[in-house]
Image 1: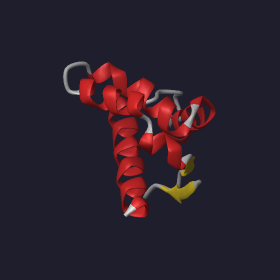
Image 2 (image 1 turned 135 degrees about the vertical axis):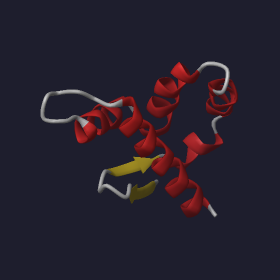
Image 3 (image 1 turned 90 degrees about the vertical axis):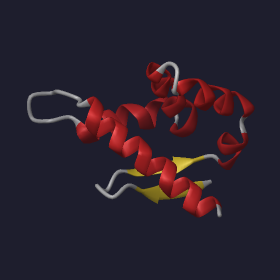
Image 4 (image 1 turned 135 degrees about the horizontal axis):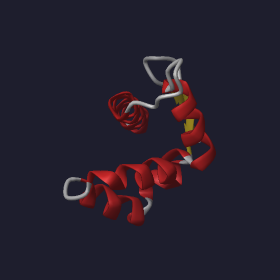
Length: 86
């Protein structure tokens, strides 16, 4: 299990097997053509419960979840997981 946190302090865990999941690789390949697939990628990588917590982490005082902020967090999660994997 990979445990880390993003630069904004969101703590996450990734099952190392998720990084070896062929279906995740397929989704990542298709994200360029269909950016909406990033929602599935995130759930596959950190799980549905952690994804909900991530949304709460970036939610502003009005309850708005910014796609830009989510994208930054997701990129940070990928970066951190790759650094730990190496």
